[in-house]
Image (tube, rainbow, N blue to C red; front, top):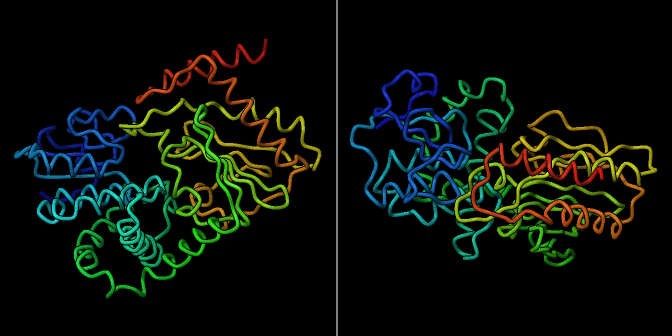
Length: 355
């Protein structure tokens, strides 16, 4: 089996190619993308885990000669590398799944030793990707083509790093140390509270954090509200609510616009609240001009500009909690939501809200 570009894969017979972490119509998709429909016995929350499960169960089709993806990220890379290196993938399956979880959802596993090892390896992938190529979404307009050179490099290089990551410390240490510093900062000077009924995690942090610290313990949440000093805030839907994260039971995303209108009615700072559409992979609601550049939206909060709100933290938190409790009053969380169902929930809520 070998990796081929997505454009080439679309030309092949359906039995010859497997799509990983993407949707390749009419082919086997080992993917959590919404609607990709992997075999039920393989489902798990990340695409890499689905691919590894196919190896564990011995159901990778013998006729499949090629594997593809239309973008490069940690989850997709680990899934493809696993199919191309089945013996090593089975040997390191728990670590590889932890890497995919961290890279895609920014969540740390509960096992501290496993989390530490996964963080080092993902930090290596992240730092080398930026130094040698470009940051995620840096070439979003041509990612399908541009990602091919990333796959060529990392598919060749990863085994050595997996076998002895200490040799490559200079590549991963800076991000690894920063993530750990921010984890310690949050533990010592911050706080977290989880509202189970609306699956909201509220994080009070002393400063904008690395995502692996901010979302590290957010496995049960669909969205994260971060409250920083000087009345600076962000509310973000997690990527887990964009994909079919099998094994979880999320609420559907609610369009930010009604909440934006409510917050703008309270805001007297002169700035306006803005937010991306629910179809974005990670919509963020925040005060200030809308961030059009997805590379910046995907980057860590400490690399974004924040604006101070006139709304006090307690009022903001209570307003958001009240909004989502009303939005989910007649909706139960479930494992899989189609976009049509999400649109229907939003249409129904908008009608109720306006009464």
